[in-house]
Every structure is written in C-alpha cells, then in structure tokens.
Length: 273
Image (cartoon, rainbow, N blue to C red; front, side, top):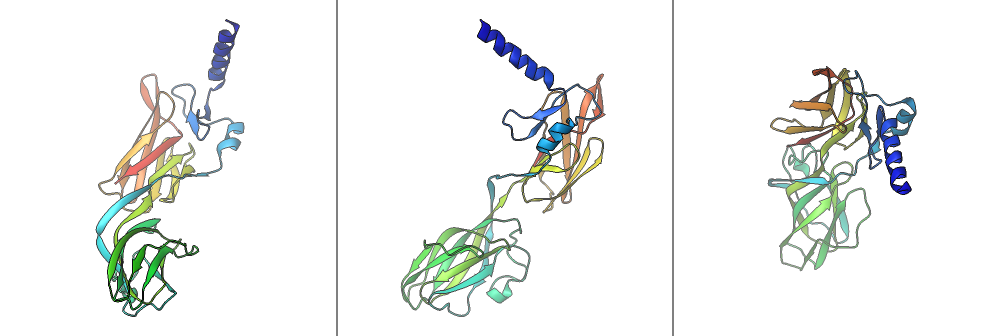
C-alpha cells in the first residue's frame, strides 16, 4: 500500500508543479501547460535556458515522382576511370551537359533522386558508380556494361550540397541520366511561443511572430493546393493555419470564460502537398 500511495503522490506532485510549460514525456520538445485563458504560455526562465537552442529534425524524406527528364547526356565519351559531375537540382541551365535549359524541376531541397542510367555505346567492359558529388566514391556499382552493348539500369543516388551527383566510369562509354523522381525533406517545424523555430527541416526558410498568437512561416516552395496541419500539445489550446504563396500563417489561442483569447503557444506545423 505504501508503494501505491508513494506513486500517486509523486504523480500528483509532478502535475501540480507544471503550471506553465514543460518538456514532453519524450523529453524532446516543450509542451503547453497551465491555466486556461492566459495571455501567453511562456515557460519560466530556467525552462527557457533548457529548450531555447534549435535542434535538428531527422525527418524521413518524401518521394515525388516526375515526368522523366533527361538531366544529362554526354556527347563525348567518358574515358576509362573518369569521373564527371552533373547538376541535378535547381533551375539552372542544363544544356551544357545535354539537359534542358530550365533544369528538371528538382528543388534545391532535394537530397536524392531516382535515376535511370544508360551506358551508351561503351567501347570497353566495365561499370558505373554514382554518388553525391561532395562525397568519396563508393565501392559499389550501379550499372555493369560490356563493350559494344548499350544498357540501362535504375538507381537511387544521393545529391551533394549543391545538388550535383557524380558518375565514375571504369571503362570508356557515353553516359545518359534520366531523372524519374526525387526525395526531399518534409515541410515541418516545431515553433517556440516567441516565433523562433525550436526544430525543423531545411525546407523552412524563416519564421516570425506577427502578434499575440499569430505567426508566419516561410518555406522553399509555392504552397498552392497544399494542406497545413497544426498540432498543439496540452489541453484547452487550439490552432489553425492556412497557406498563401510560399508562406504559412498560423493562429493559436486558448479559451477564457468561453471566449477565444489569442495566446502565444508552442506548436507543430506540417505541410502536405
């Protein structure tokens, strides 16, 4: 019986002590707590020090298929053991590498692509290796070919920081690359009550508190036809959001005597397109 009473007392003490904002049960982000209807849900100063630094968010990548796009096509044969880098992401001019003038529509935020690689008219027997342009060449091949026989194979290849991938040819061949889709981080951010980002993905460009319970989040793409979801931890707190252009506008509030009151709150925002 003493064990049960101790557990209840300890639990009650924890709940009663949390009169503003505490970390969530997972210990990874702040949660709104406290009296309903307050003008703000700010944490105590000691709690601010513990949670103020932005943290990286290792979210899963989202795959987006595209109409196949020829990003590069070598007019000249790659010599044996040669490595060449090709621009894949961004809206630059790809004509110098045999691609389209306005790129393939791959956003700068893309981390990897699905690609069909062709060894076109190889004059030797060998293999291709494909990898992010700013990383060491891997030991594995994505395509094997024989002299005089063109062949195509599919691969998923990471992109470098500037949106490039590199191709290594062990034997002489022309190389063609057709992009069929890309992988990019989700558009997601966990917002502090003051309008700064507590954690988020690289898709988030800027955040700001506009007024009490009012925020703007700028992202790296137009959000037309996208949907926005707002989640607020803790009871009696609410939020809504809508996209406009490349921004998300968020409102957060609490209920005070039956009336909504604009309230600064921690909140999580995700966008689905």
